View (cartoon, helix red, strand yellow):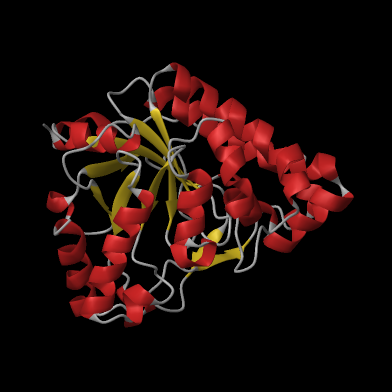
Amino acid sequence: MTRREIVLRGIERDDPPRLPIAYCNRDFDCSDCISVGYAASGFATAQRGMTEWGFVWEALDGTMGQPKTHPLADPEAVASYVPPDPYAPGRFDHVAEQIAQWPDRFIRFCVGISGFNQATFLRGYEGLLTDLYTDRARAERVIDYVFDFENAIIGQALQHPIDCVGFGDDWGTQKGLMISHDLWQEVFRPRYAAQFEPIRRAGKKIWFHSCGDVSSIIGDLIDIGVDVIELLQPDLLGVERLAREFGGKVCFCCSIDHQRRAISGTREEIFAYARFLRDALGAFHGGFIAYVEDYACLGMSEQNYQWIREAFHGL
């Protein structure tokens, strides 16, 4: 059985012969999942950190940082903004070669930081949230710049031999959603549903990453077709609660909790937690994928990273 088939059996809860494992930023030879993506194209970098969308990244430490400028901070700029061309030459020139390098792996095409998060980068976090409540039309125009671009990218990606489309859209704080659930359902659920539909029609899987406490929208995501929900702080939502309320309905991809255990846990704690995740979330003939990421920028030691690898591979 290939690694691709093991991942598919895990997602479909069809008794995979072992635990599927997805690596994020190193040691891809050990990963059952490989991510590919589109390339930025057709723009000249005006300054360091500039993106084709017009916002500029700034990192003050070893993390990816955050945008320090927002091209639509001035609300008057929203109407005249021209988003990047999703069909710009060169966006997919490298994809076939990347896929060919990993013939037995589950191939996930990643849209990258997507949806709501990308819209906040354009308008600014405070500006977009304010608009959602005070000028819905302007907020939705910014949001649709992002979703329309992504939908065109996804349409092109589906022409390649991929297994899945992955999204990265953080929605949670430590205590819940960043906006009300009702507003999320009104503005964002229909856009996600429309975005996911062609992926489902093509017979591909949908993989959705979201950090924070997003428990209130997990049911919505399952309803509109998400196959894998990636949560990197499972303690925040409650592993047993996830298993009780959603086990058997979706596949979870989770790490050793990045906020606490992965950073400061002992070897015994890490190994016990890996078993706990597998036994709770993977108890439905599958339904769990282990996630491994080197998070040295958050204080994860090399020793803890290696313990996490050993713990999951031992399962």
